[in-house]
Image 1 (spheres, helix red, strand yellow):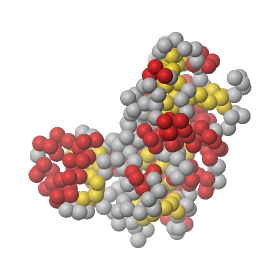
Image 2 (image 1 turned 90 degrees about the vertical axis):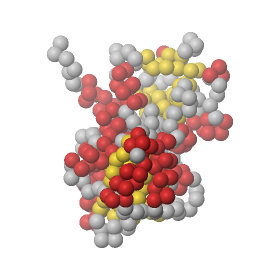
Image 3 (image 1 turned 60 degrees about the horizontal axis):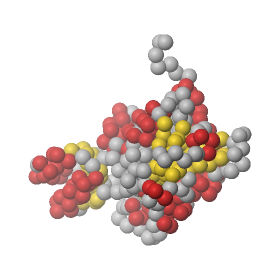
Length: 367
Protein backbone atom coordinates (compact mmCIF):
# COMPACT_ATOMS: atom_id res chain seq x y z
CA UNK A 1 0.00 0.00 0.00
CA UNK A 2 1.34 3.43 -0.96
CA UNK A 3 1.69 5.51 2.19
CA UNK A 4 1.42 8.79 0.28
CA UNK A 5 -2.08 7.96 -0.95
CA UNK A 6 -5.18 8.75 1.04
CA UNK A 7 -6.93 5.68 2.38
CA UNK A 8 -10.60 5.88 1.35
CA UNK A 9 -13.27 3.46 2.48
CA UNK A 10 -16.21 3.34 0.06
CA UNK A 11 -19.32 2.40 2.07
CA UNK A 12 -22.46 1.30 0.22
CA UNK A 13 -25.55 -0.91 0.18
CA UNK A 14 -27.62 -0.59 3.32
CA UNK A 15 -31.03 -1.49 4.67
CA UNK A 16 -33.16 1.00 2.77
CA UNK A 17 -35.32 0.51 -0.29
CA UNK A 18 -32.62 2.31 -2.27
CA UNK A 19 -30.11 -0.49 -1.66
CA UNK A 20 -29.72 -1.31 -5.37
CA UNK A 21 -29.30 2.35 -6.27
CA UNK A 22 -26.51 2.58 -3.70
CA UNK A 23 -24.72 -0.36 -5.30
CA UNK A 24 -24.90 1.30 -8.71
CA UNK A 25 -23.68 4.63 -7.32
CA UNK A 26 -20.77 2.93 -5.57
CA UNK A 27 -19.87 0.99 -8.72
CA UNK A 28 -19.59 4.23 -10.69
CA UNK A 29 -17.43 5.88 -8.03
CA UNK A 30 -15.24 2.80 -7.64
CA UNK A 31 -14.54 2.73 -11.38
CA UNK A 32 -13.80 6.45 -11.63
CA UNK A 33 -11.85 7.31 -8.47
CA UNK A 34 -8.22 8.30 -9.09
CA UNK A 35 -6.04 5.34 -8.03
CA UNK A 36 -2.95 7.56 -8.27
CA UNK A 37 -4.29 9.56 -5.33
CA UNK A 38 -6.30 7.06 -3.30
CA UNK A 39 -6.04 3.56 -1.94
CA UNK A 40 -9.64 2.36 -1.98
CA UNK A 41 -11.15 -0.26 0.30
CA UNK A 42 -14.80 -1.26 0.11
CA UNK A 43 -17.43 -2.14 2.67
CA UNK A 44 -20.82 -3.38 1.52
CA UNK A 45 -23.77 -3.32 3.91
CA UNK A 46 -26.35 -6.02 3.30
CA UNK A 47 -30.10 -5.47 3.47
CA UNK A 48 -29.92 -7.11 6.90
CA UNK A 49 -27.40 -4.50 8.03
CA UNK A 50 -24.26 -6.66 8.06
CA UNK A 51 -20.99 -4.93 7.08
CA UNK A 52 -18.68 -6.91 4.77
CA UNK A 53 -15.10 -5.91 3.99
CA UNK A 54 -13.69 -6.11 0.48
CA UNK A 55 -16.86 -6.90 -1.42
CA UNK A 56 -17.15 -5.09 -4.75
CA UNK A 57 -20.34 -3.34 -5.87
CA UNK A 58 -20.23 -4.83 -9.36
CA UNK A 59 -20.11 -8.37 -7.97
CA UNK A 60 -22.93 -7.63 -5.54
CA UNK A 61 -25.08 -6.25 -8.35
CA UNK A 62 -24.59 -9.48 -10.29
CA UNK A 63 -24.57 -12.10 -7.52
CA UNK A 64 -25.99 -10.52 -4.39
CA UNK A 65 -24.35 -10.47 -0.97
CA UNK A 66 -22.35 -13.42 0.33
CA UNK A 67 -23.38 -15.42 3.36
CA UNK A 68 -21.77 -14.23 6.60
CA UNK A 69 -19.42 -17.24 6.68
CA UNK A 70 -18.28 -16.57 3.10
CA UNK A 71 -16.96 -13.04 3.62
CA UNK A 72 -15.17 -10.89 6.18
CA UNK A 73 -17.75 -9.26 8.42
CA UNK A 74 -16.49 -6.09 10.11
CA UNK A 75 -17.53 -3.42 12.55
CA UNK A 76 -16.35 0.11 13.26
CA UNK A 77 -14.41 0.57 16.49
CA UNK A 78 -15.82 3.61 18.29
CA UNK A 79 -12.52 4.99 19.51
CA UNK A 80 -12.21 8.73 18.88
CA UNK A 81 -8.41 8.49 19.29
CA UNK A 82 -8.08 5.72 16.69
CA UNK A 83 -11.19 5.01 14.61
CA UNK A 84 -10.73 1.82 12.61
CA UNK A 85 -12.44 -1.35 11.47
CA UNK A 86 -11.94 -4.84 12.88
CA UNK A 87 -13.18 -8.16 11.57
CA UNK A 88 -15.57 -10.13 13.74
CA UNK A 89 -13.72 -13.40 13.17
CA UNK A 90 -10.18 -12.17 13.69
CA UNK A 91 -9.17 -11.72 10.05
CA UNK A 92 -6.43 -9.14 9.57
CA UNK A 93 -7.41 -6.08 7.56
CA UNK A 94 -5.17 -3.90 5.37
CA UNK A 95 -3.38 -1.27 7.42
CA UNK A 96 -5.07 -2.61 10.58
CA UNK A 97 -8.42 -1.34 9.31
CA UNK A 98 -7.46 2.32 9.58
CA UNK A 99 -8.49 4.93 7.01
CA UNK A 100 -8.23 8.62 6.21
CA UNK A 101 -11.85 9.17 5.21
CA UNK A 102 -15.08 7.27 4.64
CA UNK A 103 -17.09 7.92 1.47
CA UNK A 104 -20.68 6.90 2.27
CA UNK A 105 -22.84 6.14 -0.74
CA UNK A 106 -25.93 5.00 1.14
CA UNK A 107 -29.21 6.50 -0.01
CA UNK A 108 -32.29 6.61 2.19
CA UNK A 109 -32.79 5.53 5.83
CA UNK A 110 -29.79 4.34 7.85
CA UNK A 111 -27.41 6.03 5.44
CA UNK A 112 -28.68 9.45 4.47
CA UNK A 113 -30.82 10.36 7.47
CA UNK A 114 -28.18 11.23 10.07
CA UNK A 115 -27.98 7.81 11.75
CA UNK A 116 -24.81 6.71 9.97
CA UNK A 117 -23.39 10.20 10.35
CA UNK A 118 -23.98 10.01 14.10
CA UNK A 119 -22.09 6.73 14.25
CA UNK A 120 -19.15 8.25 12.37
CA UNK A 121 -19.18 11.34 14.58
CA UNK A 122 -19.04 9.16 17.70
CA UNK A 123 -15.97 7.44 16.24
CA UNK A 124 -14.40 10.80 15.25
CA UNK A 125 -14.13 9.50 11.70
CA UNK A 126 -13.80 11.86 8.70
CA UNK A 127 -16.47 11.32 6.05
CA UNK A 128 -17.87 12.81 2.87
CA UNK A 129 -21.16 14.71 2.92
CA UNK A 130 -23.49 16.36 5.38
CA UNK A 131 -23.37 15.90 9.13
CA UNK A 132 -26.09 14.68 11.47
CA UNK A 133 -28.28 17.77 11.33
CA UNK A 134 -28.03 18.41 7.60
CA UNK A 135 -28.66 14.76 6.81
CA UNK A 136 -31.66 14.40 9.12
CA UNK A 137 -33.27 17.64 7.95
CA UNK A 138 -32.63 16.70 4.35
CA UNK A 139 -34.38 13.36 4.81
CA UNK A 140 -37.43 14.53 6.77
CA UNK A 141 -39.66 16.35 4.28
CA UNK A 142 -41.79 17.86 7.05
CA UNK A 143 -38.90 19.35 9.07
CA UNK A 144 -37.11 20.31 5.85
CA UNK A 145 -40.11 22.37 4.77
CA UNK A 146 -40.36 24.00 8.21
CA UNK A 147 -36.76 25.18 7.89
CA UNK A 148 -37.33 26.37 4.33
CA UNK A 149 -40.36 28.38 5.47
CA UNK A 150 -38.30 29.94 8.25
CA UNK A 151 -35.92 31.16 5.53
CA UNK A 152 -38.86 32.47 3.43
CA UNK A 153 -38.23 30.08 0.55
CA UNK A 154 -41.28 29.52 -1.69
CA UNK A 155 -43.03 26.16 -1.21
CA UNK A 156 -46.17 24.42 -2.39
CA UNK A 157 -49.00 24.14 0.14
CA UNK A 158 -48.69 21.02 2.28
CA UNK A 159 -50.17 19.17 5.24
CA UNK A 160 -48.33 16.81 7.58
CA UNK A 161 -50.16 13.93 9.22
CA UNK A 162 -49.09 11.13 11.53
CA UNK A 163 -49.86 7.54 10.64
CA UNK A 164 -51.80 7.24 13.91
CA UNK A 165 -54.03 10.11 12.79
CA UNK A 166 -54.60 8.55 9.37
CA UNK A 167 -55.38 5.08 10.68
CA UNK A 168 -57.38 6.35 13.65
CA UNK A 169 -59.50 8.98 11.91
CA UNK A 170 -59.27 8.54 8.15
CA UNK A 171 -62.43 10.52 7.39
CA UNK A 172 -61.18 13.55 9.30
CA UNK A 173 -57.84 13.40 7.51
CA UNK A 174 -59.47 13.09 4.08
CA UNK A 175 -61.67 16.09 4.79
CA UNK A 176 -58.74 18.18 5.99
CA UNK A 177 -56.67 17.39 2.89
CA UNK A 178 -59.57 18.13 0.54
CA UNK A 179 -60.26 21.45 2.28
CA UNK A 180 -56.65 22.68 2.46
CA UNK A 181 -54.88 21.03 -0.49
CA UNK A 182 -57.46 19.69 -2.95
CA UNK A 183 -56.88 17.49 -6.00
CA UNK A 184 -54.66 16.39 -7.54
CA UNK A 185 -52.19 16.07 -4.68
CA UNK A 186 -49.09 14.07 -3.83
CA UNK A 187 -48.86 11.83 -0.77
CA UNK A 188 -45.36 11.06 0.45
CA UNK A 189 -43.69 9.26 3.34
CA UNK A 190 -41.80 12.00 5.16
CA UNK A 191 -38.52 10.10 5.45
CA UNK A 192 -37.89 8.20 2.24
CA UNK A 193 -36.16 9.18 -0.97
CA UNK A 194 -36.22 8.30 -4.67
CA UNK A 195 -40.02 8.55 -4.86
CA UNK A 196 -40.47 5.35 -2.81
CA UNK A 197 -44.03 5.16 -1.46
CA UNK A 198 -45.16 8.32 -3.26
CA UNK A 199 -48.55 8.45 -4.98
CA UNK A 200 -50.53 11.05 -6.88
CA UNK A 201 -54.21 11.25 -5.95
CA UNK A 202 -56.86 12.70 -8.26
CA UNK A 203 -59.91 11.92 -6.12
CA UNK A 204 -60.91 10.60 -2.70
CA UNK A 205 -60.55 6.91 -3.52
CA UNK A 206 -56.99 7.41 -4.79
CA UNK A 207 -56.20 9.60 -1.80
CA UNK A 208 -57.38 6.87 0.56
CA UNK A 209 -55.13 4.34 -1.16
CA UNK A 210 -52.22 6.77 -1.26
CA UNK A 211 -52.42 7.43 2.48
CA UNK A 212 -52.49 3.71 3.20
CA UNK A 213 -49.50 3.13 0.90
CA UNK A 214 -47.41 5.91 2.43
CA UNK A 215 -48.32 4.72 5.94
CA UNK A 216 -46.55 1.44 5.24
CA UNK A 217 -43.24 3.29 4.88
CA UNK A 218 -43.35 5.97 7.58
CA UNK A 219 -45.11 7.17 10.71
CA UNK A 220 -45.27 10.69 9.26
CA UNK A 221 -46.86 11.63 5.93
CA UNK A 222 -46.61 14.81 3.86
CA UNK A 223 -49.40 15.74 1.46
CA UNK A 224 -48.58 18.43 -1.11
CA UNK A 225 -50.51 20.34 -3.71
CA UNK A 226 -49.66 19.61 -7.32
CA UNK A 227 -47.62 22.31 -9.02
CA UNK A 228 -47.99 22.54 -12.78
CA UNK A 229 -44.51 23.32 -13.97
CA UNK A 230 -41.20 22.06 -15.25
CA UNK A 231 -39.12 19.84 -12.94
CA UNK A 232 -35.78 21.60 -12.56
CA UNK A 233 -32.84 20.42 -10.48
CA UNK A 234 -29.48 21.93 -9.51
CA UNK A 235 -26.41 20.42 -7.89
CA UNK A 236 -24.71 22.17 -4.98
CA UNK A 237 -21.09 21.62 -3.94
CA UNK A 238 -19.18 23.05 -0.98
CA UNK A 239 -19.14 23.65 2.75
CA UNK A 240 -19.29 27.20 4.08
CA UNK A 241 -19.18 28.79 0.62
CA UNK A 242 -21.18 26.44 -1.61
CA UNK A 243 -21.82 26.93 -5.30
CA UNK A 244 -24.59 25.76 -7.61
CA UNK A 245 -24.36 24.09 -11.01
CA UNK A 246 -26.23 24.82 -14.17
CA UNK A 247 -29.83 23.59 -13.94
CA UNK A 248 -31.10 20.38 -15.46
CA UNK A 249 -34.63 19.45 -16.42
CA UNK A 250 -36.43 16.16 -15.85
CA UNK A 251 -38.77 15.13 -18.67
CA UNK A 252 -40.60 12.20 -17.01
CA UNK A 253 -42.14 9.49 -19.13
CA UNK A 254 -44.81 8.96 -16.49
CA UNK A 255 -47.09 11.39 -14.67
CA UNK A 256 -44.33 12.13 -12.18
CA UNK A 257 -40.70 11.14 -11.71
CA UNK A 258 -41.18 7.70 -10.17
CA UNK A 259 -38.54 5.42 -8.67
CA UNK A 260 -38.60 3.34 -11.85
CA UNK A 261 -38.18 6.42 -14.03
CA UNK A 262 -35.11 7.50 -12.07
CA UNK A 263 -33.23 4.24 -12.19
CA UNK A 264 -34.41 2.35 -15.25
CA UNK A 265 -34.70 3.10 -18.93
CA UNK A 266 -38.44 3.62 -19.41
CA UNK A 267 -38.35 6.74 -21.52
CA UNK A 268 -37.72 9.59 -19.08
CA UNK A 269 -35.08 11.99 -20.33
CA UNK A 270 -32.77 14.62 -18.88
CA UNK A 271 -32.06 18.00 -20.45
CA UNK A 272 -28.80 19.55 -19.26
CA UNK A 273 -28.55 22.46 -19.19
CA UNK A 274 -32.24 23.29 -18.95
CA UNK A 275 -33.44 25.96 -21.37
CA UNK A 276 -34.37 28.86 -19.10
CA UNK A 277 -34.08 32.63 -19.07
CA UNK A 278 -30.73 33.69 -17.61
CA UNK A 279 -32.51 35.64 -14.87
CA UNK A 280 -34.39 32.49 -13.84
CA UNK A 281 -31.15 30.48 -13.81
CA UNK A 282 -29.52 33.00 -11.48
CA UNK A 283 -32.52 32.94 -9.13
CA UNK A 284 -32.46 29.15 -9.08
CA UNK A 285 -28.76 29.08 -8.27
CA UNK A 286 -29.16 31.55 -5.43
CA UNK A 287 -32.14 29.66 -4.05
CA UNK A 288 -30.37 26.30 -4.31
CA UNK A 289 -27.50 27.62 -2.20
CA UNK A 290 -29.98 29.13 0.28
CA UNK A 291 -31.73 25.77 0.63
CA UNK A 292 -28.35 24.04 1.12
CA UNK A 293 -27.40 26.47 3.85
CA UNK A 294 -30.84 26.39 5.46
CA UNK A 295 -30.51 22.73 6.40
CA UNK A 296 -26.77 23.13 7.13
CA UNK A 297 -25.77 20.68 4.42
CA UNK A 298 -22.15 19.97 3.60
CA UNK A 299 -20.27 18.57 0.64
CA UNK A 300 -23.00 17.77 -1.83
CA UNK A 301 -26.71 18.11 -2.38
CA UNK A 302 -29.20 18.16 -5.22
CA UNK A 303 -31.97 20.75 -4.91
CA UNK A 304 -35.24 20.22 -6.79
CA UNK A 305 -37.62 22.92 -8.01
CA UNK A 306 -40.69 23.53 -10.11
CA UNK A 307 -40.71 26.42 -12.57
CA UNK A 308 -44.14 27.44 -13.84
CA UNK A 309 -45.05 28.83 -17.26
CA UNK A 310 -44.91 32.29 -15.66
CA UNK A 311 -41.35 31.58 -14.40
CA UNK A 312 -42.52 31.35 -10.80
CA UNK A 313 -40.07 29.22 -8.80
CA UNK A 314 -41.29 26.70 -6.22
CA UNK A 315 -38.76 24.84 -4.09
CA UNK A 316 -39.58 21.13 -3.83
CA UNK A 317 -36.86 19.48 -1.73
CA UNK A 318 -33.17 18.92 -1.09
CA UNK A 319 -31.41 15.58 -1.36
CA UNK A 320 -28.19 15.54 0.68
CA UNK A 321 -26.86 12.28 -0.79
CA UNK A 322 -28.07 12.19 -4.40
CA UNK A 323 -27.50 9.27 -6.72
CA UNK A 324 -24.18 8.75 -8.46
CA UNK A 325 -25.34 6.29 -11.09
CA UNK A 326 -24.42 6.83 -14.72
CA UNK A 327 -27.77 8.49 -15.39
CA UNK A 328 -27.87 10.51 -12.15
CA UNK A 329 -28.47 14.22 -12.39
CA UNK A 330 -26.00 15.34 -9.72
CA UNK A 331 -22.73 14.46 -11.50
CA UNK A 332 -24.19 15.17 -14.94
CA UNK A 333 -25.04 18.75 -13.99
CA UNK A 334 -21.54 19.34 -12.62
CA UNK A 335 -20.04 17.86 -15.76
CA UNK A 336 -22.07 20.35 -17.80
CA UNK A 337 -20.87 23.12 -15.46
CA UNK A 338 -17.23 22.18 -15.99
CA UNK A 339 -16.34 19.69 -13.25
CA UNK A 340 -15.73 16.19 -14.62
CA UNK A 341 -16.80 13.13 -12.65
CA UNK A 342 -13.32 12.19 -11.39
CA UNK A 343 -12.60 15.74 -10.27
CA UNK A 344 -15.98 15.89 -8.54
CA UNK A 345 -14.99 12.86 -6.45
CA UNK A 346 -11.71 14.60 -5.53
CA UNK A 347 -13.52 17.73 -4.46
CA UNK A 348 -16.00 15.82 -2.31
CA UNK A 349 -13.19 14.01 -0.51
CA UNK A 350 -11.37 17.31 0.06
CA UNK A 351 -14.55 18.91 1.39
CA UNK A 352 -15.05 16.01 3.80
CA UNK A 353 -11.53 16.38 5.14
CA UNK A 354 -11.99 20.15 5.36
CA UNK A 355 -15.17 19.77 7.40
CA UNK A 356 -13.49 17.22 9.69
CA UNK A 357 -10.51 19.49 10.34
CA UNK A 358 -12.79 22.43 11.01
CA UNK A 359 -14.62 20.39 13.62
CA UNK A 360 -11.35 19.33 15.27
CA UNK A 361 -10.68 23.01 15.92
CA UNK A 362 -13.76 23.23 18.14
CA UNK A 363 -13.63 22.60 21.89
CA UNK A 364 -16.39 20.50 23.44
CA UNK A 365 -15.45 21.28 27.06
CA UNK A 366 -13.60 23.86 29.09
CA UNK A 367 -10.91 21.36 30.06
